[in-house]
Amino acid sequence: CNTDHPTPPPNHLAQRTTTTMSFQHALKAVLPHASTDKSLPLLNSVNINPSGTVRATDRYTLGESTFTPDENTSTYLYGRKFTLTLADAKTLAKVPGTPVISFDDADATPPVVTFDYRPIGGPSYTFATVEGEYPNLDRLFREVEDAEATETVALNLTYLARFDAKHL
Image (cartoon, rainbow, N blue to C red; front, top):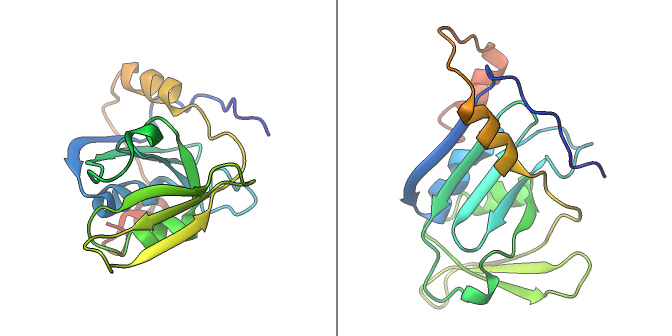
């Protein structure tokens, strides 16, 4: 799978949220940026770093948000990024709070990850992760952020509908 995607032109939307929020709100902020094309499984997904970052892209827009990890999430997992399907991410975006994230079987192919919500006895979700390497968004964000701002921006209504209240 080719993960070297072309750089979006400077007039494409890049959204980076720098305020730290709950896991639920961080997911909601990036969901509109995930591709809805199921033939592109790596882009029809959300990439998560348990140290506190979620990302999504559809090749034309980029979204990144940060969250404060639950204190019981092992720092061993920090930097160990994984990808969930868009459908699984939407499920988690409906649950308030920030879960403890753990790998049930890190050696499984694909790895299985669990989200346990506190207090004890709260909901728990287990998902298989998406196989493959998620695109390097650091390079894309840098190039978009360094681009000169344009005076006008045009968004089509179909795209704008992705940001309606149901997703945020």
